[in-house]
Length: 430
Image 1: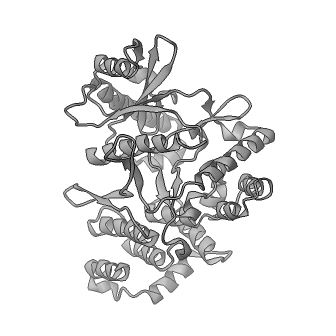
Image 2: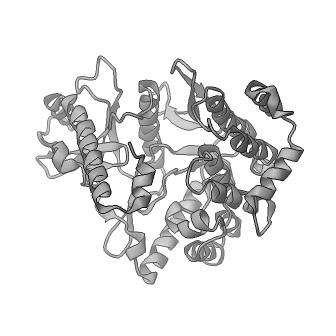
Image 3: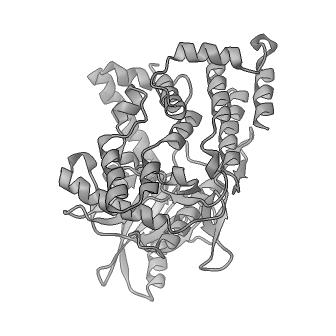
């Protein structure tokens, strides 16, 4: 059977239509599975109890209606609407049970982290929805069945950056600069993700992410006192996938060389220890709610937010990136929108220190290289963009870089076997 990438690049209308039908069928099946696990009466009863007995009505759109509706399904989540008799509206946020969804332990961790992050942000000037309750998947005390977060529905619509006028972009960028400045006021001591503390209103710093052993058992990684440990374990995660033949089975040498280069060029060590700052991991335009004047009414989807080194936390948002420069040309240079944002931070807000951080993407480039494999489209461009940004060089030739990397590597002779290669990289990591 023809692979998906071949169909996408073929531009064959019939094949693309068939692929779209398959995707929709699979997507609706996932949504239906989730809906079948939700006890609607229990969900309404819980919401009513949280509002001191005020009655409510639940809107739980069918899979057919929800699939292509971004107000209901966004990324990995499904949103039901709870409308109270006084007109107030909440959302019930559920994680979709996709085939590639993380283990229950990690999914619950993500949910708790998002809930706690919103609770923290409510103490700042950053506009976020108020959260009211959460429950875990697999918890016998969760009468609703599926894990959820109950949160306020904010006014505004998801922003469409490409459709904004220059004046609207200026308006948005000034508000975003204020958000960056507010986040800079709240340093943390460790690198990790926020979790509920032992007391009702307390906050703890938990692991940064999870690794999995060959049996599929989740193992928490972090929190970290040094960012270098975090980045080394990110590379180590890729190494373990190579050892178990889960990635790069046909071109392990290429990925090994990239991992070796990453270990040799970790992000700036001047920020190796605290303070760390909260970083939103999905700063696409859809996660900023705005009104008609492009006033930000809410910043949403903090599901994977992490406490990160300062130059990572204050990179420019993804919505301002120039994908063509990054993907096609292998450049991490600032786009016009990023340059404007830097100017606002520096000249209007008097924060040249933050402006200098938004203009670089060393952390972004590093993280992209830990997530890509040689069979992916734009593998060479991704590696090249990180290498150029990190070394300050203007050009990158994969074959020349690969040859030099092979000559300089300490992994020994490849004919000695793949195990020796992995052991060599593990020795360097330690």
